Length: 203
Image (cartoon, rainbow, N blue to C red; front, side):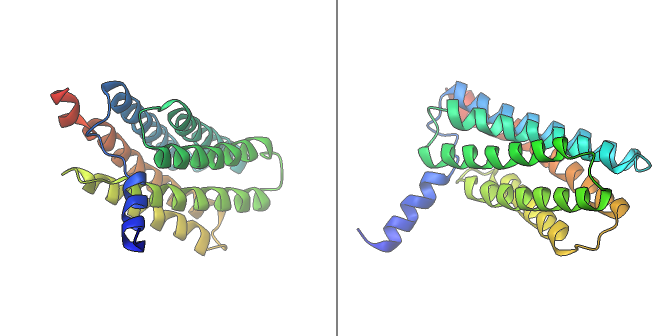
């Protein structure tokens, strides 16, 4: 088998195509997008409207967000039997990363603010980059794949921004993260409403 063919097959295995999926699988994917999007939107708004709160409180919100989004990814990867193997593996790996990051943020909220900000920046930055790459990889041949690509690009840029500026003050880190979370939350909800809509109607 040629190398180009192998690369194409590998890429196709990681794509998330609604065509060929059962209604239950489509609903599961949409639920994951919806829960993750709603969590991102809510936490993003809270970060912007409560900037005066202490870093540990805001870290707690971040931890909850990471655990929720990681948890739904894990559920989809473990129980999404009609999804492709490659996509299920990616969901499990991303879910583990996010859940572990969330647990770290929740467990270590009592440590010094500077250290806590560093931990949050690393976890959120890496998580967003991985999720962004995954979103772009998931985008298939659907006319609505642009939402996945847009989500992926913004997620990657947000992750890079958080990691590339280690001198962020607590206030600015949380403000930037809040804005990015709101944008990702809106795009996530759009993905939830649009993914597989045509394919589901045809079933």
